Length: 430
Image 1 (cartoon, one colour):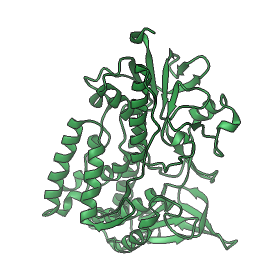
Image 2 (cartoon, rainbow, N blue to C red; image 1 turned 45 degrees about the vertical axis):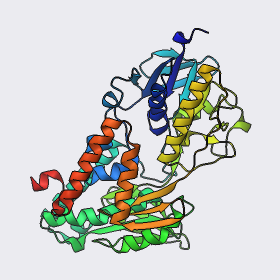
Image 3 (cartoon, rainbow, N blue to C red; image 1 turned 90 degrees about the vertical axis):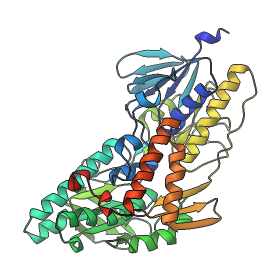
Image 4 (tube, rainbow, N blue to C red; image 1 turned 45 degrees about the horizontal axis):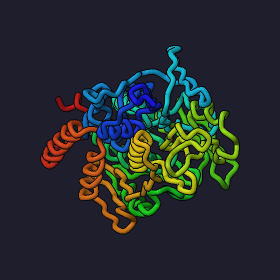
């Protein structure tokens, strides 16, 4: 085998894909590495809230791949993968370019799901990407600015009502964050913060139901009540439709449809299978797909029928080792893939992935978090917020970027002790 001609392609530069590539380069992996993603920036999703609140700069939370991959000799292609022919080992891009691979890594994640709810996705604000964050931030600022000028009470209150659909971790974190952020921003404009309403809507009768963060439910419930503006919980409610001026819902034990007047509905409920995985799954025997249509991979993270294809994250399911769709799991899986590709190159035995949930972290307001460490210790408040920042900053992709983020965060923490305006939009206090 001529190792210099070997090519490893990685589709999806999220946690598993990006970190697999970086780990391979650290190991002096000999085959060429090409990383493909439709975006030009990495999104550190656990800290996307910190970019929304301006606690961390957008470029820190969403650094460019050009910055992250400089001097790594990892080829980066910004394009959308339209098809993968597993039998021919060929990738087709939206540009029309085609590539052959020797080894392939799939790390495309999932996409936002809307459960066939009328009015979505055109009338809601998801929160998964940098563009989502920027769009929501613009919407919030527009609503607050318009409300301050609006003399019609009914119209103004609709502008100041913010609904979050889905009480999983993202929904709960969003509700708690907005309940501190919105009144701070609105007060700066001279508005009456008592007119702001944050509503968290969930079909289940409780928050964090069946989630890895379920152990933090009571802490989260208390935090939602203890924000600058207490969060209104609308539980046991099914969303029937979302429109430009309202959200319609129905209680699970009621036939009556009710309306919540709002111009901002943030959707965090449900996920759907990535379109590329749907195409790939058609090439895989039905018995090697899970109930949601995701391919099974072995514990070495290889497709069962195509061992040259490794996959990780929430676009696949590991046999007999189902894991929550969390960044820390994808990070560990990316490390295993790098180790196994290196072992494959050297003719060594592959290792099973030993990814473990080390605990969970939740942002529950400005400067306030909760931490469940190894399911043994629960911490909340400012100390948990420091743990959350430290843990996530440690996971940032490169040492240089890690240092920049740490320096910025420490500076921000110092400012926070004396100036609460650091939580305001930059343009509001310059």
